Image (cartoon, rainbow, N blue to C red; front, top):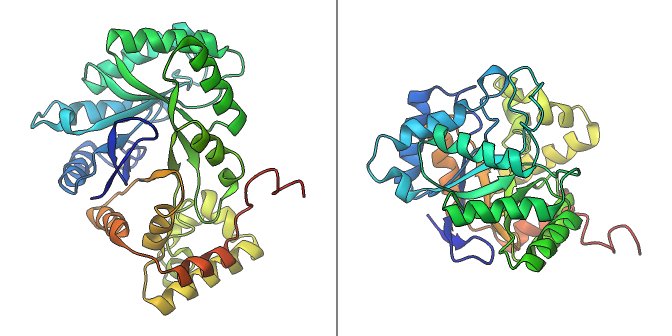
Length: 331
């Protein structure tokens, strides 16, 4: 495994981030534990979760699965850089009691304590805001986060799904308080969805945030979706982000060109999509959410995959990025 610094911090993290969103809803506890053991054996030390994962009536279940894994000992907790998130409505019926969601100081305090109990740990390494809270000023948010740092409950703060201007606002507010501010941004970013290159990634680079890419295969679209569809194994791609995309004839043509290109090079689409992200400026690592050991092994192979410039150029031709702003929308 290869490692890098998380943004401007001294924290060293693996170039792959183990995503746990499927733990509970799609992957049972025993299987989830086995996947985490394998990930750790492969050198992956960066695990990402969120308090709402488990979904529906089982919100929090994913954190509980990580907690029972940590409780097995064997230095599991010490070896892992643990990231979770706060913001979501934790009510099972979607109607949380007032102040049981978003980023008020009260909810942050309540949510972090609940996550710590579920995770069976005394601290969270990276505590991320899962979404922008337009109702709560950053001065209040940073007051709450600074208190948690002083209490030893969290070490670093990160954002997720923030636009570039909110990254700037957050870190300017933190700077006025003498706080470290955001050290990472977790955003939707992949070959087929490159809008983050316009402002989010430039803002992250300007403020020293590491960028963590979620949905690096765009819901399976970049993992050989058309080939699997043709072979009768593409049922998982018919719904959601990938299925919606393939219904668009223009996107379908792009994906077909992508798969044809990689066939000529003898390369696996999913591995190339991950390897491409690892070449991008400011990118800490993509989040991978394997359900099997083979899927995890494929992701690990991507870290060692060197993409020649000829192939990178061809990928840009198939999936052109928007370019940075303001040129992307001005002149």
